[in-house]
Image (cartoon, rainbow, N blue to C red; front, side, top):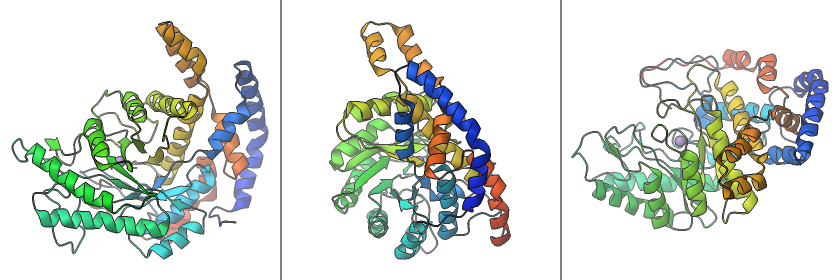
Length: 430
Ligand SMILES: [Mn+2]
């Protein structure tokens, strides 16, 4: 039995006060779904098995390039971060794994493994970092890493990624996510083709170091930190990379890494169709890579992405096994609260997508009945699935209302007394 951080009797009394209402809501929704030919318990079972990874960097307060305003009781190191992740997992029962970022989370891998397994947590994809210069690093990434003009700098970046794989092997991770900031700020600064060729050569070396049962995820991003051109700028380039590297290479879709108004669900469909969807970084955005909380701006888009995922799941798309991870920056909220709600939002989109009447939808598509086809999606999306999500949490040991239970437990005040305040810095993008 794993340890829990929030006292079990607090969660139990929180749930006891809410369970009678939840049971009535669940029964009422069950009756309505039954009329649509849907068994509510089957949806709940799927929701219970659904998980999304927490990024270790997400539990610290984020910021913008202007400033960062630290919150109370911020984690001091990776071991504090693991404890915060354990709280999120305990109350939501939706986040069984943590995704580490090296070198930010560097520590003795055996100690890391021990710290996580104490709370029943596993490790998701490893994330390398060649977009900043840690202290004592020999060569700078100011002008790039895997696509850098200098062979020595590229070598250093390759070695770093291979080291991430080594650490991940001890932790039981099964994937490496590579995102690079390489690009240019001025037309003419970089030769596009040469930079991409250098990147591919470097990635081939990283790919060669990948264990047989691992996957390599490459993450595209339109712009930032480079503002004129980016080496891995869109899903087309990402797909080329995955094809060039081989069967263990897949594309990772970060929802915030596209131009405004891009049809992301269609990109997801394409990558599924050609067997190259690796996984997601869930977040939301209004203008760019805002890293806002998943589902906070456009929950319908999140649903439409899950509509594609559930379609692939139910139709048994070959090799379909996407990794789910949150990737957000919490600048004005308690990161634990934001991450709990975001995990639940991702779960909600999944549950809603499971309600789509796919047979009816197909019929409307074949008959060119645009109105009824779109209403079929809307009808699933409009269904309030909260009783299903809450019941899944209750049955698996979580809290019916995670944020309320978290506040009742006083966790933030408790860690604020133990963890000294972190000085606010300049830029704080995490
Ligand atoms: Mn990301």
